[in-house]
Image (cartoon, rainbow, N blue to C red; front, side):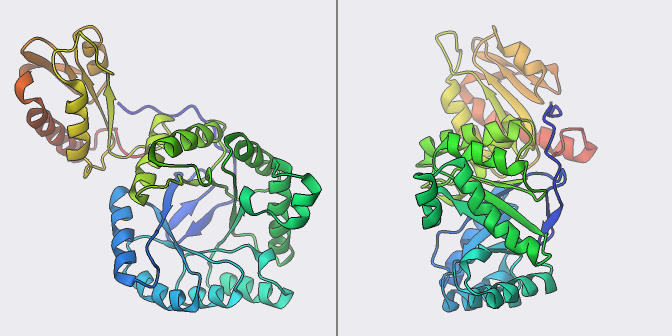
Length: 370
């Protein structure tokens, strides 16, 4: 049973990355970045397709060289989702990928060099309706700001961001989004809070270099969760030292937990205790793997005993309440006559969930993606 979120979003300007709307109350876009060699077109396209299958709205591709720009031309033709090109310093690469159909340029205008080079990139972006993403990182602040502040601070990150913003505004270019990422949760959160009051453009959220699969997910959940709960953020990336597909999964889990956006099965499961009548942990883990292909948002409760099981099952779309030998099944908040044999729960529950998904799709029951 999906519920509306109580969060009130920060008003912002609407931009488009390809056909994906960003800002102005559009669904918060979840994105990741390829980690293949961009010049390996087949490998990069394959990874983009994996990310798209996991739910990625947008994928970023690093384009460090002209060879990579030529490869991007082929990658773009085969990509199922809009692509952001990650470019540093070389304005000629930005011009080339703009020509080849980039959906967004991730390039800091202040780092390109001379005014004529900046203007050339901005003119190309304007001509082709390509937005720009300004990306400031706590680990790569300008030297004068490092000397001025002594260390990365929220004020330093925002001052860096505003230098780039002011260049675009001076050139009368307003279709951009900004990120002020840091690896420290409090530094990142405070930076985004300060920036949110200074510009009308959408904000791209991230805790940079967050860490490995588990620790990075925790840091990102806390940092992004604090901001999203305040209504700050229009698109996000969870940065993990892991398979990029994990970044998409964690991103949707964060949005799901805040009732901002739903995709796929939301499992409500007990941590298990001596009251459990079946192995809850293995059941849920197996179901999560089997049901990864489902995109319809749906709450499924798997509780191992009769103490909390019925209550959770009544408010889920599909619910299981553990009992001896055979457990109670609930569909759409109603207890079913059918009981599921505890010895073969995964197969039976998977079948029930898939049948309910088809029923929901057919009858357009109100558990649609937000």
